[in-house]
Image (tube, rainbow, N blue to C red; front, side):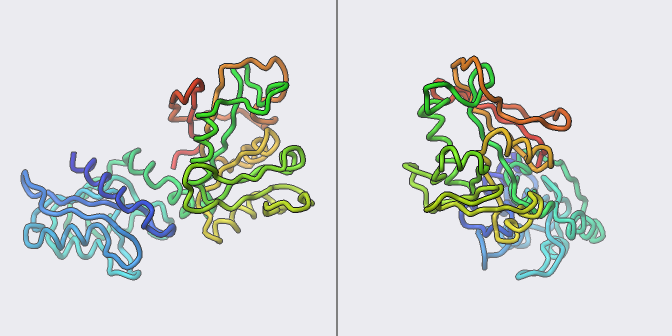
Length: 314
């Protein structure tokens, strides 16, 4: 329950924490009592562990700390949390996940153990999921990529004589996904056929995502999209350097196939509509080999069903 509480606390930082930092929550327990709680609230605020330690005071000595991410061991804008934990006399630490940053991974745990603290890492899926985009961005140097597609029950991405495959509720969810993404992208084939706006509409979006087109130009006159014509790996690395942490792909089968063939897709969102098309393209163009997905989940959305699965777990 204390780890669940730490995850709840971490979530309070969403929308406040800068993209270069993860969401983190911490709970200090001494005997049957919670003696300190904290979460990271963004730039200029202390880290979650420090907030919990300050709240606990002397009651931190001999306590157990539940924290959603491995405590830091380096000097940044604040001193290392691992040192503060050791100095406070905390006896045990249960960390939900290790820090995926190759420059940090495991060093906080090592520092705690050197200081005489008993440490357990449980590798919590919920904790990894909470920071999925940041984990991919910091570990792989590219955005977390989600491929979204709507298909019929017979696996087609278009229905003759109809503009839409999925229903209104699914289309609203797509606008919510755009609003939550740093960038949205299609391929030039989709641009030439549809010239999409890719904006987040009618969902109260506080800002619009960057809107991209991958492939060879030119863009249509008046297009508001950014053309990205380089190799996909290079373009994603450049976008990551510009602060793009989440990328939503809305392109057709060719773009999806290219991203999957390059092993650059992390998650699939497939809106399945109760319709039969009878003919047409599928959701993904030819790939060099089959892919096994994980964490399959299904959610009804209006008359449709949303299938979610991971190509790479964060």
